Amino acid sequence: MQELIPINVVIGDRTYRIKIEPQDEEIVRKTLKLINDKVIEYKTQFAGRDMQDYIAMVVLWYATQPATEGVPGLDRTVLDALARMEQQLDKVL
Image (tube, rainbow, N blue to C red; front, side, top):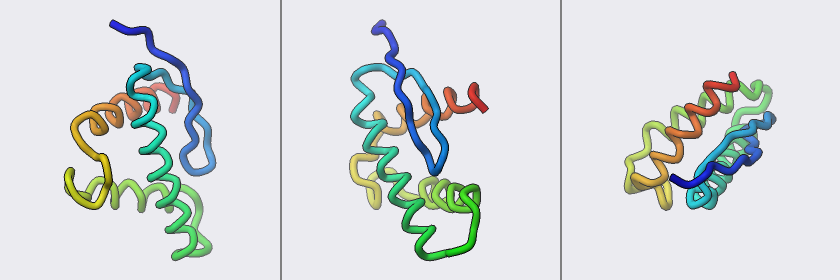
C-alpha cells in the first residue's frame, strides 16, 4: 500500500486538507476544478445566494449526471476518488 499524500483542496470558499493516494492527485484536482467551475457558473446565474446554496446545487447537478456523459473523465476511478474525498471531508466537518 502506498503512503497517502496530504493536499489542500478548495471547494467553494473553504479549504480542506485531505490525504489521497499519489496516483489519484490528478483526478482529484480535475474533479475539484470541475466542481469549482460549476460553483462559479451557479453564482453567475443565481446572484444573491450564499455559498452553501451554490454547493448544494453543484452536488445535485453532479449526482444526477450519468457516469459516462456530461462529466469528462468521470469513471470508476474518479468515483472512488470522490468517495475517499467525501470520507476525508466528513472527518474534518
